Length: 152
Ligand SMILES: Nc1ncnc2c1ncn2[C@@H]1O[C@H](COP(=O)(O)OP(=O)(O)O)[C@@H](O)[C@H]1O
Ligand SMILES: [Mg+2]
Image (cartoon, rainbow, N blue to C red; front, side):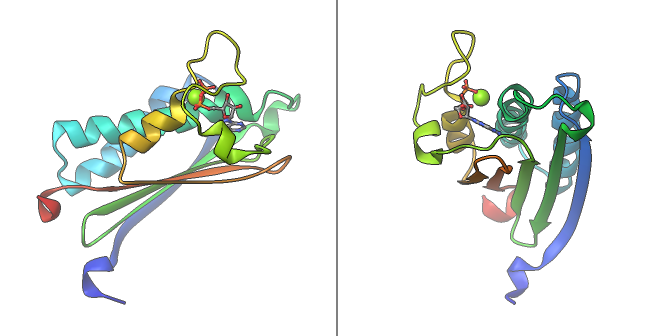
């Protein structure tokens, strides 16, 4: 393993998919990311992207789920010596049949209240976005962003 890619820190956190936890998820990610000495803009970008992923779990993933105990979100984070921050947001909800379609700008299945811009925002505010989803099994969104002095 290359020295600059050595993993320096990580966390994992599981919490109920409730809108009251949107702010909580921004908080934990923000405080983890702060260890990389980000600019205000970098920190805002990470929080915004994570927020979109978490909101999707809350709004879309569990729309057919009736058992409250099953509505969980798992966020994991890690960063490496080269300042690469990786955050994954996972749900065990309904999943998506066609991820490519779902990721198109302005595509939404959420009705008039939703803009369909969540994935576009996640892409725009990070360096790499990958989405794994299986119909009926859930979705994992992985966001990567290079943070801090090492990359300036
Ligand atoms: N975690 C998820 N589980 C199931 N479906 C999802 C998830 N995230 C996104 N989607 C689907 O992808 C569509 C596009 O998401 P997004 O770009 O965030 O726009 P919006 O949330 O405004 O609809 C959603 O309308 C939904 O159908
Ligand atoms: Mg969305």
